[in-house]
Amino acid sequence: MSSPDLILDVLCVGAGFAGIFELYRLRSLGYSTKVFEAEEDIGGVWWRNCYPGARVDSVVPVYEFSDEKVWRDWSWSEIYPGWKELRRYFQHVDEKLDVRKDIVFNRKVVSAKWNADNDRWLVKSQDGFVVSARFFLLCVGNTSKIYIPDIPGLDRFRGACHHTARWPQEGIDLHGKRVAVIGTGASGVQRTPNIAFPMRQKSIDDDASRTMKHDVYSLVFRRRKQTSGGHSYASYPKNSSDATLEERFLFYEDLWSRTGGLQVFSANYQDMQWNQQANNEFYQFWRSKVLERLQSPKFRAILAPEIPPHPVGAKRSSLEISYFDTFNLPNVDLIDLGQDPIIEITANGILTADGKEREFDVIILATGFDAMTGGITQINIEGTDGISISDKWARGVRTYLGMMTAKFPNLFFIYGPGAPTAFSNGPTCIELQGEWINACIKDMMEKKLTRIEPLLEAEEEWQNEVLESMSSSLLSAPTSVFMGKNIPGKVSEPLSYVGGIPKYTELCRKKMENGFEGFSRSSIL
Ligand SMILES: Cc1cc2nc3c(=O)[nH]c(=O)nc-3n(C[C@H](O)[C@H](O)[C@H](O)COP(=O)(O)OP(=O)(O)OC[C@H]3O[C@@H](n4cnc5c(N)ncnc54)[C@H](O)[C@@H]3O)c2cc1C
Image (cartoon, rainbow, N blue to C red; front, top):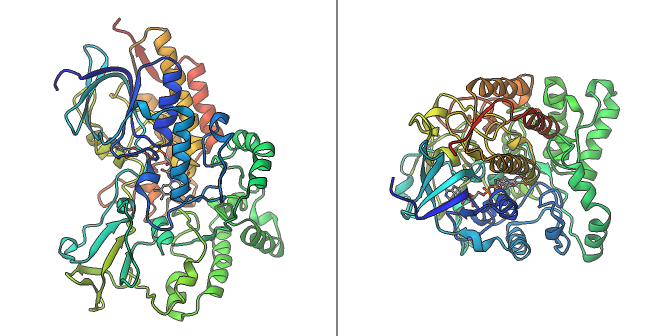
């Protein structure tokens, strides 16, 4: 690789929550830090996911930075903000933290190579720019790499075809168009789900916003670190079998009608995630609610079958407002691709196994992501023995504490594999991991250490912890994104740590307190 155009202490990749948090904090500690961002603005997923209906399913203020400097004079209009409001929020973040001046946009990082002569990464971007950085932070998010199934004929389609996470910034006029949506994951639901729960969206007026900031914000930011999912609620500390049938159904009803949101599952009885019987019962409750809203017997059978398609929670549950009602509209149809798979995309539409070719003007691919690892492995990162991270992880993902991987010194990743990522609220996990990484970098800088790398045996130990956390859980069901099963050829394994935020934070803290146990640290200075 060529000589560097820029020499830095830290290079971060990605300008979403993680990259912005790291840039602001590391710069405040006095380290030369830059962010390279492939897109043209800040916001991460909220820059890319601008399809109509794209919005969070964590509530605010849980889903925001905990720094008072940012939240003090920012007010949300809804408890589940949509992408436009989230973009305005990121502009506000920039006004408060002045991060933009250290972010280079339209700069996609394509490769990096470890240089053992100077304990630095030499990082290259698509435009040929080369940086030498002591520390290399991958803040690339867990949904940076989109997944488009290999459907024959996709390139032949004469209409418009867009993946939800590559939605044109100028929008698409769908009025009067014949539209096909492929996929029923979160984006498929938001566009037009699977086992979806009622969102119970609420608007927030100025008075409510003032009251929340005064009474609730600092409490929420402390509380979210104490709950398994990094939200402000925890599972109900009682097994379903400890309650009578009537008590259970009243409880479900309460969660469903009054609370809504992800709590419908996550604040449910604590055994819901590992007790098949409890999970089945709750599925039947869910089903009765959905059947009430669907008119067509065909759609009832597909959308709410008697036998659960997977345990509740084993696929990322989606939140909905009018999803099920959509299927009562005269201009909406639903094809069960499990029954009648797509044979090919034709010039005019989609041909399915029932022999029907349906014509469309627009195809929307709500087909998801190569989640957790894709954003990292698509960069050609070469470690100490010349093997790329993609090759290392092809046989199975190994991390230490979900932040580093052996043979790749001084390389950290945030909200990626091996951490509570998929089972946690983004900003909570990002801030906790970011703080750990920053303390680690600070300690190294102060001690003039130039290299930190996890030991292979520590990595194995962590892998066992990750496996054990998932072993008794129903969340490892077939086709679960949590296991990487949505991507053909990907090793089926738990990609996130299910042990919860408090235990994770405690384990990370102990490793640091024990003198960075499980790491080797050295200096060439
Ligand atoms: C539609 C949608 C809704 C979501 N809703 C929620 C929610 O309600 N609650 C929740 O907790 N999480 C949610 N998430 C998950 C989301 O990833 C996190 O909330 C959060 O955005 C993660 O922030 P991040 O900074 O880690 O990553 P991101 O926001 O994904 O930002 C990563 C950035 O890195 C950039 N990048 C990637 N690769 C490169 C490269 N090679 N070179 C340069 N730049 C690169 C990307 O362009 C992107 O801007 C949602 C995700 C999606 C897609």
